[in-house]
Image 1: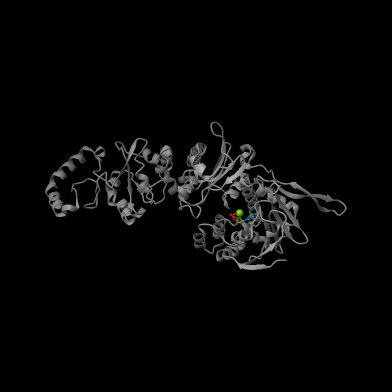
Image 2: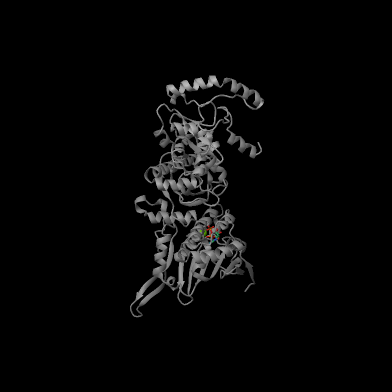
Length: 564
Ligand code: ADP
Ligand code: MG
């Protein structure tokens, strides 16, 4: 034999392993889903690399996943003939968590089992979930294209260290063998394993095989035969017709591709025919991932061409403001050897991107109309990202505007629940503008003296305080023909809303205050452009406004802070 080397897990792995075993125990059978999911990913990767390098298939192009158990050794083994792992890849991929957002994830852990379990799930437990049921995990692998002498054996008891040794391995691909903990015997059963596979992994497009079993009347027990049978449907979920797919299957498929542990919030599944032909199955997650704010973070749409996996996070398939969407697009038009560069130029890809954006907006509109509580959940998680669409996607600007939700003086709460349509429905007679106020925080907006006259007149004002709002507003000038107007800008034209008496009073006041205004103007000199009497204040004596066409004080502060 060759020498083994012992290495320590990255600190985060140790922490995660400990937490996971304790918080996910009630859902322990997910280990099988995770290992099958990895086996499927490995086959996808091989199939993709083999497009340019057919030798990698080594004459064995039928990709499959096998699950076996051994009652005497108390092991369960998951084997694939996918891409495999080199020694370095085993060390890097099985000993560390290289994902972005890792640090943030750990900073959010609370020690509360239930909350942490949810967080861990969201983060994705993956390979390490093996240790929920196994006291020892052995990974035997050989990367496609490497000689049989360059196999690798990776072993760990999940306590903080792992060992790697070189082995000879004829078969390409990976075998993961779990030695079960003392009380996990239930997984040493063909019936149990089939049940879990059908529940969690039926959507996997490769055959998942197990050894046939037969009832032996003489011995009066199940006997395992030396013959494989396929235990899942083994066709890609998105190619099946909608009526043949259950909600559970859609949900499990989502978990597989999104590496999420929670169910999605909503999904849309369509086959598009015509000038370009593709199938899309797109999901809106329940919760924002840790790296949502990173515009360069991986996007969730996988690209397939005629069922062949081509790439993860093909960011050309969706506009950036929909980067929270996860799913699959399977194109019938693109060439198999499509590259990211080709994607950028492709007309077919543009058609897919436009089509996908429309589908997702439609899905969100349905959600907002039919399930307002779920839409509120969505808005709380992803609303700020969706707002980017107002500037980024001129063709869909009006639809996106319809999906926006705001805090307003009507609800007197920071919760963003008011749509522009709600606002229009409540406009006063004679009101021809949608009033808003933007500030650094909700509290600053809600307590602004600019609101006084609006409160008195019972006019609703939208209160905006998200970072993207000012930027968004520079693109959102009107909604259904009604202009948006800042209550902190310019001469407020509330005349149409004033009655005769008010108008008279205002005219008189302006006259009477003329000398005072002159004096103030002289005293303030260069610092102001104009001093005028106003009807916009109720309790405060004075306020500062900027001209209609100038930058708001809030935006000015932001620009200054950004060094402009
Ligand atoms: P994820 O699947 O989200 O990347 P996992 O923890 O499930 O995270 O797996 C970690 C990594 O280990 C994978 O990204 C892959 O590189 C590698 N890996 C796991 N299982 C296999 C396998 N069966 N074949 C090849 N590589 C694998
Ligand atoms: Mg995985």
